[in-house]
Image 1 (cartoon, rainbow, N blue to C red):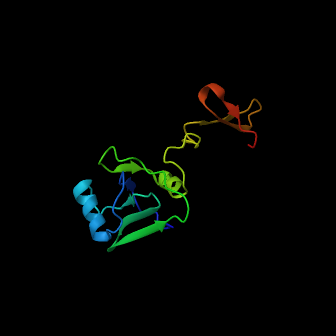
Image 2: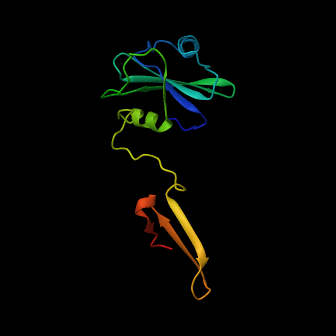
Image 3: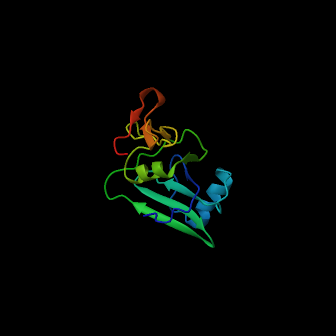
Length: 148
């Protein structure tokens, strides 16, 4: 399991990769085929032809990590090899992929910004007392927060 979250981006090698390659061979693929820096703080993910094994190449401070995962049952939902460039995905999509789900989730909740959908009004009441109201939701469907 990837515990260290010190990476900027995640790149998938589309199609299949010969997983007999080790650190040096995968680093050459990253550099020569994808024109990316294998020493960057990114994860580079590779999958075999049968779609049941993954290798993840990661640089950390003074050396490479090579994570390896083999499924006992089932297959990964891996993107096709129509394009030869690496596919940039989010860490959330990588988690879906490792959990056996497709990268594109139609039912997944989209990330929202709380500041975009929250409005706080502060003012003095009619009696001169301090009052505030917090509203949430989109502008056309504002609701008063019942907790505060």
